[in-house]
Amino acid sequence: MSNLLLSVDVGTTAIKAGCFTPEGQLIASAYCEYPLEKPKKYWVEQDADHWLKLSKEMLSAVIKSSAVDREDIIAMSISAQGISFVPTDFNGFALRKAFSWLDTRAVKQTQEITNIFNNKETAFRTLGIHILPTYTLPKILWMKENQPDIFVNTYKFSTSLDFLNKHFVGKFITDYSIAGGMLAHNLQQMNWDKELLKLLDIPLEKFPSLDWSGTLLGDIKSDIAKEIGLPKNVKLVLGGHDQECAALGAGVSNGDISISMGTASILIAPTDVAIIDPKLRIPSYPHVEENQFVLEAVVSAAGVSFRWIKDLFNTISRNFSYDYDDLVDLALQTPPGSNGIKFFPHLSGATCPFWNPKSTGMVLGISLDTSKSEFTRSLLEGWCYQLKTNLNVIEELTGRRENIFVFGGGAKNQKLLQILADILGKPIRISATSETALLGAAMLAGLGAGVYSNLADAKTNVRKEGKVIENDMAVSRIYQSLYEDYRFIEDQFIGMNYCTKENAI
Picture 1: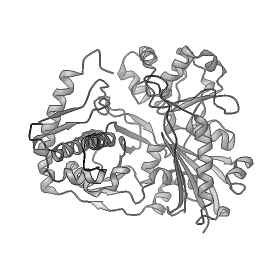
Picture 2 (picture 1 turned 45 degrees about the vertical axis):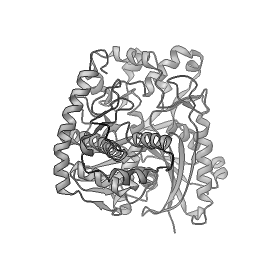
Picture 3 (picture 1 turned 90 degrees about the vertical axis):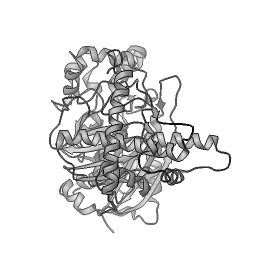
Picture 4 (picture 1 turned 135 degrees about the horizontal axis):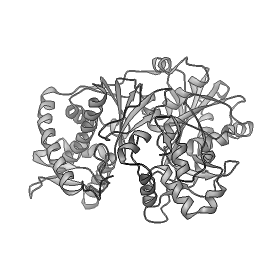
């Protein structure tokens, strides 16, 4: 076996590492979790040193696997959580705890950035995304106003990707897919927005350099290689944002779309150009494929809604403890439409395509006769209706998407995927690997190391046909009528109760 490819996936609460063959076979992997810290309301932080320490430990565990011949490893790349960042010194060491992307303290600073633009349409066309406190730039501005000593002493604002790049090869460099979510990147100019940063009095030089994913960065430093157990001259290749890496690993190309069925559900639709939605519904980001872009729609309360109902039922149940498969089986005891119950899963605000943070969840149609089965099915249907709404918007902007690839925890249950296929009215393809982000990063490693001539070649080499879930045409016709009713009520619900001038983004 030769030309093995390593990858690391730095997630929000877990770090994974994997080793792949050029054909996309995962031959060894390792996984560990690490904590988030919540020192105050709206503050969410984590120790950036964990990004480095645990990445090295997981890589070392993979390399020690009996299935891996360390001498065959030639390159590595990184899939990284987006927009979390830490201020670092010249040597790449953290000056404080990292700001998680989940941190929303910078509400005041978000408004300050908004005020620079004439209107939200101008901001969206310039940045490709809405101005929200989850993104990086408002938190940088918060630090400038509240921790000025740290701000002044910061050499670079480092996301997890460029933080690791600095320690592995000595370069502060990030890719466009990560930069696109920082609110400091001009999508039209494909560079840091110098004018915006100047108006905010934030030095441009404090941001890392930019390049496309798949760019060869150099040999991993000898001391790091020795610590991990790598041979000499293993290359580090620039990685990218985890969602785009996952779409790449799933084999998604232009004309396709991926749906991650995780805590949040994210739809990724690759495009040849940056498409700016005139109605500001779906953000646009650079892809991990050079000169490519994606429309990226987020349904924030997706799998987390499912976890909420599991925890709720298990709290009140005396004789039975439900797992997710149990709940799907329970839901299937009720016919499509949940006997009139409709669940609107805006448990953490309404994200794409509504963008209404003040929206809340709602259940309609319950009565004294409502069963756990009906309630559970309505939640799963509500989750899938949100995905259908975003798919419809994406297809309105780009045309029909022929192949729908799904992955993530929810993709392990084919009965849930059958509900999704029936609601979408289309077949869906289960990704052949569950570790799509790791595979996508490994493909980028192979590109930079010359294993693949381009990413189309990489997809051809690694693509394996996963199971296809066909939709039931009769059930899809039932769901189309139910969906139209659902959408009418949702528009009235969000419009009447939340879309006021004061609450709008």
